[in-house]
Amino acid sequence: MATRDSGLADIGTAAARVRGLTRAFDGRAVLDGVDLDIAPGEFVAMLGVSGTGKSTLLRALAGLDREVTGELTVPGTVAVAFQEPRLLPWRRVLANVRLGLRAQDPAAAARRALDEVGLADRAGAWPLTLSGGEAQRAALARALVREPSLLLLDEPFSALDALTRIAMHRLVLRLWERHRPAVLLVTHDVDEALILADRVLVLASGRIVFSGPVDLPRPRDRDNPGLTELRHRLLTELGVNTEGQ
Amino acid sequence: MPEAADAGLATLQEGRDEAAGLTSVAIDGPYTGPKPAAAARRRRHRGWYRLISPVAVVALWQLLSSAGLIPADKLPPPTTVWHTAVSLVTSNSPAYGTLQHAMLVSLERMAVGFTVGGSIAVLLALVAGLSRLGENAVDPLLQIVRMLPLFGLIPVFIVWFGIGELPKIILIALGAAIPLYLNTFAGIRGVDAKLAEVGRVQRLTRAETIRHIVLPGALPQALTGLRQSLGVAWLALVVAEQVNANAGLGFMISQATQFLRNDVILVALAVYAVLGLITDALVRLLERRALAWRRGILG
Image (cartoon, rainbow over all chains, first blue to last red; front, side, top):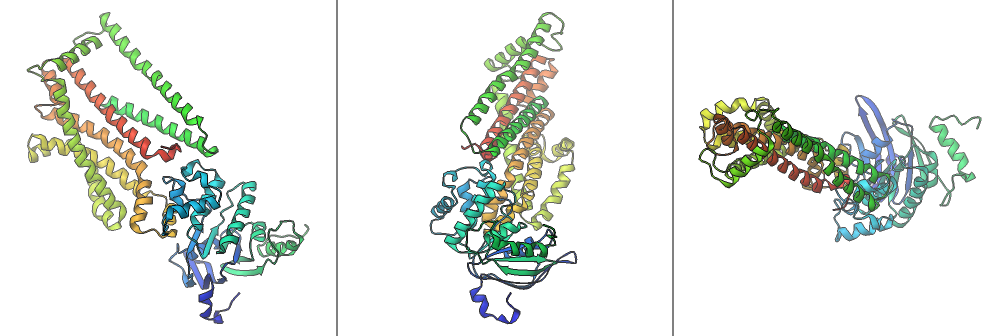
């Protein structure tokens, strides 16, 4: 973790830079002086038990929370995929993807993005006719079409069934490798974090209490023995007792 | 008129159920061709079944009248009502004029009143819905007006506006405006905050947010308000016309009351009901088109 005196030079290079970020709800500090740097193109996963402020931090980075105090710098474009797809039900899939898009040819760009997530043939469909996985892919296309330098993923796979989730992990990795945005994935799934991320953080009591790299080539299998030690460490940080396993 | 309103509500409910049913079908899996077609077929069939009980009631009414069990001066049989209707259309009687003229006069009042009231309501709902300042300025006034008994205002309107067309138009406009305002305002404020966040994340301008998120999100409830408005506006028309009129369906009814012509009254009431059903069907058609996304059917 970078320290405060790493200086202003960092701002130009980091995809996101957070210093001393604090957020209190009714006097209770959910975020209590968070420091975080995300390098361009870095895939960071953030773990934490419920109520530790993961989503609060993500919402602050997305510009959805104006009540935070501290220093927050996100130089480039930000895009978000939420836990629910949040597609506008009254706009067809293509119109959802090009929502707010300022490109030369928004429709063509939106079509390309849909093609990338394998939904080209559903461009004219109403969102309510999509399956859960399709809707989440459309939401990913809507985020990626903006060519973000920082992609925020707020537990986007948690509502999907296990098989769809595996397919989505592969899709996200493929898209990330092609477009190379910096990614902050908020999740409560340790295995998901280990399979996807370059670096895993643990947020507890409003602070980042652990930050460690995952130095294995992708694609990774969750049974990879190289992950065992880190998984054990992460579970311990999350307060899950792994003794006796 | 209440009959027409009730029938409208029943079909509204049915339409909702169908919409809900189809939506859940659509959510279960990707759209597959035959399902909506089958549903449409079912719907057509059910349309015919739904005619059976009204027809049976009319037949029973005719039978009881022919058997002399219903006194004709209290309730004339359907055949008499029908003949009266035909003669009111074909001949210009000195007491009633023609039915089509009366209908046109009533329709025109309704159209003018409803258009004026509806436009004002939507405008005020936008002002109140889209800004706190607007809400504080507009909403208290409309909440007060809402609580005023609509038909209790008639004497005041007569004092203010006389007994011409103006008080009738204002009564209809006021009746139409309130439900449309309330529902449109609530619809705007009820737009899913999560979708509003999407607008912020996608960096939509305020105009884009209103166009893509607020207005479409408010539309379902606004349309519900539109149907309620139509119901109230028809009711206001009937009452306004009976208070003081020299033309229109209401005038026809008050004339017939003096001549103890229940058959003429029934004809006029039936025309009110049919007009109410037609406008309700038009709104339902509008709903089907504007809310196609709910059913997940293309086009």
